[in-house]
Image (cartoon, rainbow, N blue to C red):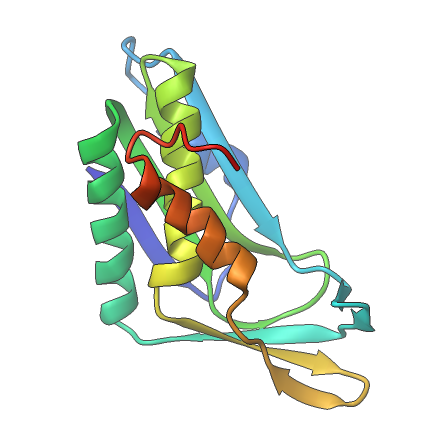
Length: 159
């Protein structure tokens, strides 16, 4: 059901979202998220970052996350594109797009996929700072965001 790609090349978010609706009259909503490289993290300047992954395992994890979203909400299609390799501030990192007949299903599934991607997909991020490279640690806020889906599988848990 979902299109999943892990790639070094940039992507055209508009074209990818258009593909979710092409030739379909049953789509009533498309929700999306595009993540970008910031120029700072935790108050420290960032010149760029390098994203690494475990080929094969990463794509499988993303497919499983999308399949779980499809089991929780009535989605029609999804796309997840995550870049790897060196990136600089302002560049796109990730796209999550979900199509559904209704906006609530699309919004919830899109947010769920992104929350689980941040905590369950095997990616590693190294930032290039003025003080040298540093590996980015997992954030407890990402775990909290993903954990709310476990508390309430429909995603209605209070934040």
